Amino acid sequence: MYRVTIASNRERGLQYQIYLTPEGGETVMIQDFSENKQFNIPMDEHGICRIV
Image (spheres, rainbow, N blue to C red):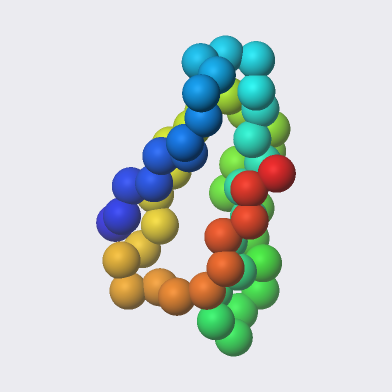
């Protein structure tokens, strides 16, 4: 797994919603509005990561 950390200059007060869309696959929400800035993705997976 590859650990991703969202770069932000604010320590608190921001909530993130994270979606992963692998090539040729369906979009999956992996986090729904949380202050957590870290998440894991498979090393061999390619596609789009969207952070709201």
